[in-house]
Image (cartoon, rainbow, N blue to C red; front, side, top):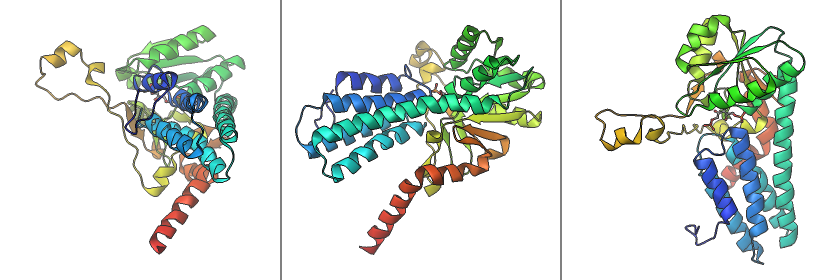
Length: 332
Ligand code: RUB
């Protein structure tokens, strides 16, 4: 593949980009790890000798990766984690070989951090699940599953209601994973959530993005589930690694909600006939902090209103940089 700037994208990197786009690689955590790996592969494949060229090539790949899916902030956060380390190394005038090895280390350290964060969330979140609980989950979230599976492995007798999650049916993946673990699971239609809510003790979902005010962007339907849970006084927990928190939202940026292909909702033949109605397919929605009891991160459980503290701790340098650069620009 040749990019706008005439740069080659190695086939394996191109494959990862496409897999993210078509959702063969999906779920915010997996997408983030795949992006870090893609940067590592792109770096390994780079044949040139000039640092400047290497930098523009890596920035180009980073940009292309960020464009694959718009909503999960874990993707730009993972890319920026690696790219910021490469930029720093280039500024310090390291050799190209040294910069390449920093690229590999940065990508590997992001991937390892991400995997251990999911385990840690499992340990922390499992403390909030009681013996005998019925847990409802939506879509397919590794972080939410980590909590459920850890609680079960601790010997807690639990049962799970998994929503189908139309239109892409990620709930079937969740049901399969839970069944393999030996956890009793019932697959239910999305529209039956309020019907079942009276039997539910806890709702646990994942997140694609957590905003500065503690709102959670997750698979479409999450906000309706949270609303039904709120009405029934059922606690709602969100399992989210800290790289799912969005620094851009501190600066007032809104999260882009992905709208996917209409063929996910209606058959292609129907579309080809030129349907007389408008069809839409938003993939995510926003659950306000008022409907969330707590966010389980690898650093501990926080109320959604404390999201800003995570952002200050994890991304303070990004924000500082923005404000300092902003100041420089206005002083010029
Ligand atoms: C997946 C989804 C998941 C979050 C969290 O949407 O909404 O709940 O990404 O997942 P899609 P994880 O299938 O459209 O990518 O906890 O695995 O990061």
